[in-house]
Amino acid sequence: MPKRISPRVLIMLIILIAVGLFGVAWLASDQMKAMMGVGRPVAPPMAQVSATAVGPTTPPVAIVAPEGGIAQALQFPVGSAQLAMIKTQVIPSSPLPLTDSLSARVVYDEDVTARIGVGVAGRVAAIRAAPGDAVKVGQVLAEIDSPDFGTAYADLTKARAEEERRLQILNRARSLGAGEAIAARDVEAAQTDYVQAQAETTRAEQRLKTLNPYGHPIRDQRVWLSSPVAGIVAERTATPALEVVPGMTVPLFIVTDPTRLWLLIDLPERLVGKVHLGNEVAVESDAFPAERFVAKVVQLGQAVDPNTRRVVVRARIKNPDRKLLPEMFVRASILQGVGTAVRIPNGALINRGLYAFVFIETTPGAFIRRPVKLQGQGSDFSYVGSGLEGGERIVVTGALLLDAELTARAGSKP
Image 1 (cartoon, rainbow, N blue to C red):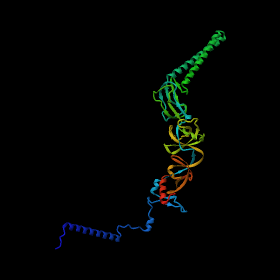
Image 2 (spheres, one colour):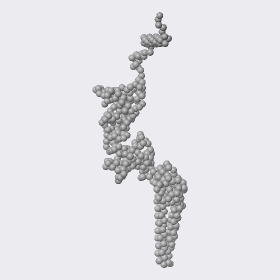
Image 3 (cartoon, helix red, strand yellow):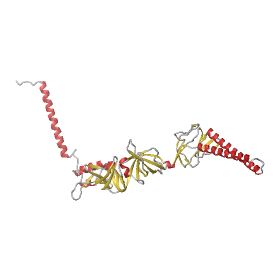
Image 4 (cartoon, rainbow, N blue to C red):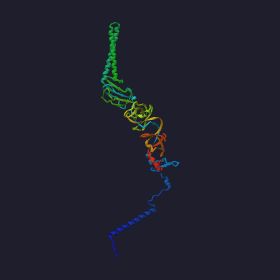
């Protein structure tokens, strides 16, 4: 009698048979699909491939030199995504600097600046000008009510009246003395009194001139504070009812011509012998990073600062657009008299040991790598002496991307 199979073994056999049948069915269906061409990509005809437009992600083409050298150029298709990360700029030639950029400060041109104040005690009675106003020579800026001026003006008026009275007495004494109506000593006394009256008038005039050295108009005891130069009211510390006293360290008004400024350059001691009057100076400001201003050296410092070992060099800078402001900190490069180079940002350089390269855009989307020699290198910019000419379109952003792409396509390093 055959042995009876247990239910647990029977269940396991059924599961194994089911799994085997499922696998056979899956293999059969895959082979059927392969035979019918379902699920396999179909290659397009060759004509269709050649007619397909180049997409923005199409890789660039590395151009190899005809003699079989290393590839030095890249050609990107129009509309490539890589072109959005590349920026180019046409850079002209410029004179070579003596050294890297120096710290400098913009200040007022004192030749066209007036710092206006008063030499007596008083009170600001009225203000006639605000900061930024354009003023002419002699234009009233403020009115100062000063008892000292009133007293000085009254003394001058009294002295002039006394001088006139003494002159009349002298004339009368001379006429009487000629007819011997009075003694000669009376005529001499009248002459002495008149000379003393003249001296008193002169003293009163000098005192009033000392109190009002700029000759501001005076009415009663009010002084009309006027501008001695034409320009712009750059600063004003005068306020209504402000008490003013002699010897104030801060002027009430500063009037200047903002189109003319001075540039104070901190020159290292080692460069003193290389800077001369008339040297041009290239000026850059963080406020206007895309612009360069030009100044000219007009005075060399006569002493070295013992703490910084630097000499202050003064240059005059024209500011027709009034972009530069007094007390701005800027960077100044004193230029040499001879020699030119192409000034490029350091981000445009590809440094490989002792060699440097830049990328030039020859046509839209086409870039060539070119070796260059540097005449000088600073923290932000470098000067290329050979390998570049002024007016070429240089890659200033994305040079590292182009270099990596070119190296990868060429399969070797330069």
